[in-house]
Length: 395
Image (cartoon, rainbow, N blue to C red; front, side):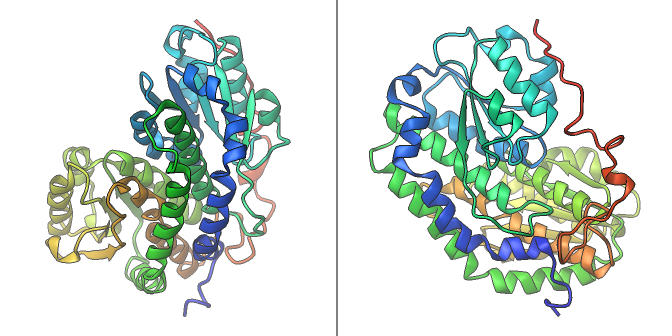
């Protein structure tokens, strides 16, 4: 049955265990990180802004707190691309001191107009820029002060993106590890330890991935008649929810809302036809809102929502008629690793839902081959990510 409904999202997820070993080796390369951020420049940083579009913004949001904790600066803000490009003033960006602020721009493809605009605006405000990308020869790369080439191994079926998201998370972790080492918040062994921890945690998760794959196919059958989706997460998992909502849009074309566990109870709770809204909760037992998430899960079940909980806790802790997908808890001191894997079940579900309903990814892309048909969705007159007018707005 899995072969019958195989798709490019599933293939990418099943490649993550192998990718983790290679990607961590390439990102946590000491010489590469030293060249990217020499000691003096790393010491100069007083503020960090991390930004991107779509999946890249989700990766930025997931990692912003980790960056703030270990960078020993005046903070790290994850800012949407449009907010930075059009609404962030020069004074908000920073004072323009040497090598500060540092604007970290995440863009797998490096062709989005707003990304290029961000890099150009940063240069006008004397901010220092690093582009995390797999397109080292792109227009964005030419506009950046420095390029952190993620060097993700070639893989032919990349649409919708999953491997690129994992690569972005890994690259950001390596970057903060370098800053933390220089500034004394992390020991000299951190590069080796973090690299090993990421690969090991993905390996732990893959002890369950075949079972999870089967669970998500079965759940996709139960949810085949759902008309829309609600995805809920708090703190860093809010951004995981953002990424997973993107996969539902890209895979299914259906409306997918993003909320946190408190706002969901105030707003999304009241949506009509609850039985038609597939609802996914991320429930990290290490977050302070874990109790609130469990309450929200129970409320969703009581009003008739089909519910999936993705958690590192015991499944018996969730009340109501809900499906619970359990992933291993990260090791002590590495709670931040949960978002490196917790998106996988939801992405599998999105891919299987599309396959079961005979849909095309992006309304245009064959789910098995990744080949794109010529449709209005990708007409250059309508699809303006690369052609949008660049304006440098500074005030």
